[in-house]
Image (cartoon, rainbow, N blue to C red; front, side, top):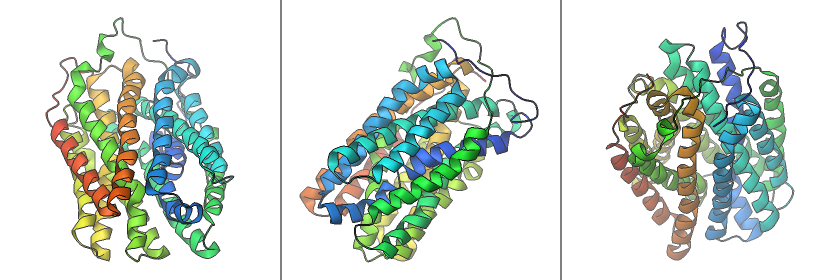
Length: 402
């Protein structure tokens, strides 16, 4: 695999301020995932009511988004090889911003589905290239590498918090049928966030290419991949339908906003919560713990219909579900050479994307058949807990990069 054309690192920029640089880079997944992907859950109830969608159709829109994510995962590594990690990150962010704007234009299934497709493409490119870039920057600070990698994955949590702070109140203020105003508002916010993102310079020298592709093989981590697949299939039902679940339980705009922001808050403290364990992430144990806790968070929402239980569920879920991706990046960094990081993360993202494609279709169909979101959320929690069990059996690769 050819390597990205890169610029030499500036000793006065990211090398001096790696944490600040990584936090700016985190705006890309904040736009692509936190706002572009996950904000859909906040507007889904209004879109269903206004456009007369079934739950299968509503879940299908996230499946289309997941297909786009799969395409983006395929093209991310070759794109980074040609353009460089930083430029690939910029391209992914720009696609995500344009797709946000497109979501506001029409609620018809075909144009909206196309917008969701490109939203997934942009999000995957931004996450894969940004994750590899963040890991490369973190390598310059070995003592803080796990924390620095985690800072990049604050991005989705930041986007979740932004959308949770705005979308429910816009919907409440403008009334039924105002879903398009939410997408337009998020587009404006994304454009503001894009300014520092596109002004930053954080490219790194290309790592030395290994003479063999054997190190890039994903066969030795099949259990890890299986767990990640189940995670992708399981977590997405919670993130797709929980706001509708809260609303059906009588939750108003404030309750919906609080719930969503607690998911984001849990994600933002995730790097500090999990930092000690990430340094030991050579096996699948850390992945198993994070996926398992995500499943516990999803299950808590089904235990009791109370505001406090929903709050605990949101925070626990948010803290764990974003830590899964941090664990994946740490595992890759420990077990593969730097020249393969982008390719390996991309491969794992492809498996994850397939899970995301399956999840919304299955859970949406279950909801339509049973007439209850509870059944879909039970399946979601079960898939997550099974993924935790499978991941726990993954052992470190013999050829460790650390």
